[in-house]
Length: 66
Image 1 (tube, rainbow, N blue to C red):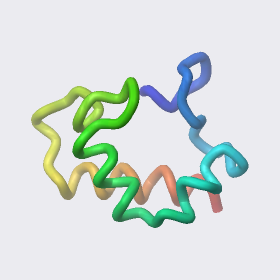
Image 2: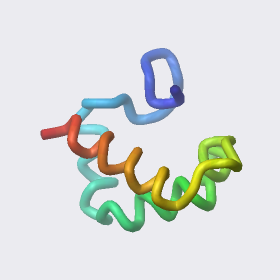
Image 3: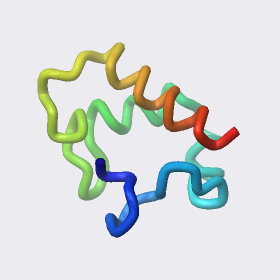
């Protein structure tokens, strides 16, 4: 939900905003979600998410940029 409009994060589908993040690779993006980054809490605030859940979410978000 954090990457929807009206939230201060790169929006789902915004290629320009995601470009510098994508250069780091999906493993780095997933690690940022797992650990938390800036205002984003670890696992997006959902401690029940597994590493596989996070990876799947990152893959989904990246796929929206193609």
